[in-house]
Amino acid sequence: MTRICRIVTAAMAVLLVTATSGCGGGDDESGQSQTGWPDKIVFAAVPAGEASTFQDHYGLFIKALSEEVGVKVETFQAADYAGVIEALIAGTVDMAQLGAFSYALAVQNGAKIEPTGLLQHRKGDQPGYVVLGVTKASGTLSSLDDFRGRTVCFPDPASTSTLLPLFEFSKANLAPDKDFKRLVVPAGNTIPRAVKRGDCEIGLVADAQLENAIRTGDVAEGELKSIWQVRAPHSPVVTRSALPDDLRTKIRAATLKINSEYLEGRGWCKGDACLVSSNRDYGYLPVEHSYYQVIWDACKATRIEACGPIGS
Image 1: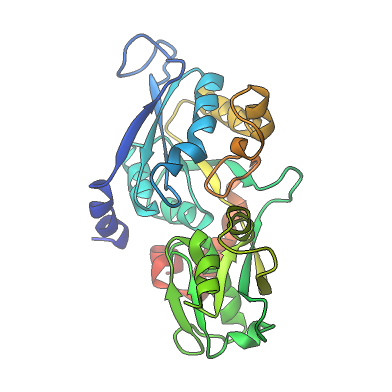
Image 2 (image 1 turned 60 degrees about the vertical axis):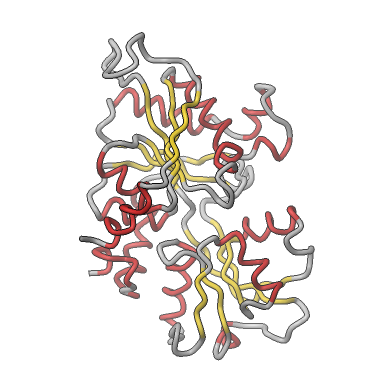
């Protein structure tokens, strides 16, 4: 049994499925509509923090997607990415918000999916995001060399924000659990607070997560400083390749159309309440599979356990 299968056994026990209203593709509640499209599509993601945040982070996007595509959308909330990946492989989920690493894992493990859109944190941003090595601003740490001998907080082992730093560390001959102590904090958005508390001296956190931590008051502006960084591919929303071509085309067009300005223009929200995803992003950019080749390269170089067959 693979690592993903073992994890998903537990994950499936805590799935929460809620229906999101939208325009149905036909009168029958099961099977396919007269156009050959399914009567519903199922969208999956992993919540950040409390389960109630799933609706806060994805509810308006899903509402807009349903209206733009003309198909009812249901949500599938899993405890972790392993549950989402297994559901994609099984075909019980049609769309999912994944991380870059989890997208590669899904493809490598047999999921027939294609990237539909790439998260864009702010309007005008270039593709990708930055993983920061943050520490207390009052401290003396200042560079990658200062990781040696420290306790470093890492997010989920199967996350891009873990894999890409490990890839860079390997180039610098910096080995986790040898040159520094690794502390795993699966909820990566809580790492700024963990550094503030002193649970770790350095934390690996996405730039958007640090920004959100400041906005929510978890840490104060200027309380933490970055002493190292690496650019990483941002998260895709994916669609099952088995869906009809014209439906996938419409889903892609809708995904790229829906952003915070679109949602505010509909009168559904205002300001930051219109941001999408757990990192509170502006919207989506076009993306191709080749954009994620760096994940395969990093896995082959690091051969960490989380990479599974990608690193072989």
